[in-house]
Image 1 (cartoon, rainbow, N blue to C red):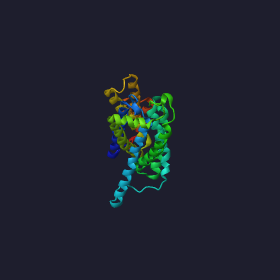
Image 2 (image 1 turned 90 degrees about the vertical axis):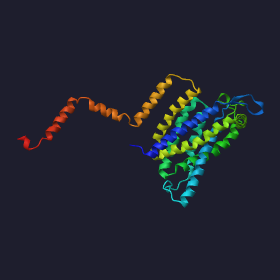
Image 3 (image 1 turned 120 degrees about the horizontal axis):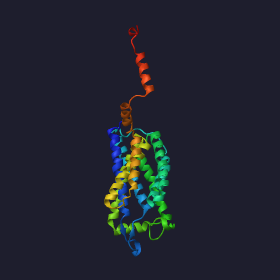
Image 4 (image 1 turned 180 degrees about the vertical axis):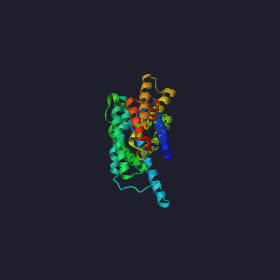
Length: 301
């Protein structure tokens, strides 16, 4: 199926803003700054606070949706199609999946597989609800952002006191130290710039992602999302944020082959190969029988 210009635009927007989102998060993680109370310099490792910032970016989509709806009330707009009534709590489960998956991916590499399973559940739930109730992508992203922002902001309070041992990235050894994060931002303003890039890009990225889910499917969204990994990897190598490992080439080759197979890029090649090979004995006999069946009646005499 050929993609429309709008679908290509959404795919490009998702690829670009998704790459910016991850790269800005990696940029923030690379900063070193002093903490509160004269604590010596240490890395900016605040995964749950960064996740709260991402939900704040998603929440901004809800404001954009209501602005568009007010505009559509005065000037009818085809992009604001009538929606089926639905309970906003429907988007609480995918918001919880988003919150858990994002937070886990910020903490460590061994938990990424678990996070991907949770993200997959989130994608399936979003596709189901968006299709069933014809929910506008801005409203879907904003509603999830509202739930995630409120819940995770409240959880930052107990996280400040819960010990995390080796999983902690702050000097106090707790799950999250929000005060330490703000002190580091105050002493290194570039961290604020990285967080701002993270917050703003996630709004466009998730809007494009939900739109791709609505226009195409959740599977297509995940395939496109996997492609941005190549962009992030290449730029991270160029900036010196990661070390090169030859095995990564094999991983990206498998990723590209899977993407090509999903999008049917192998079909023209198989068709060309089938046309170029000589027919088998069975196919030749079949062709002769068909030719005999097409012989005119007058020629039979």
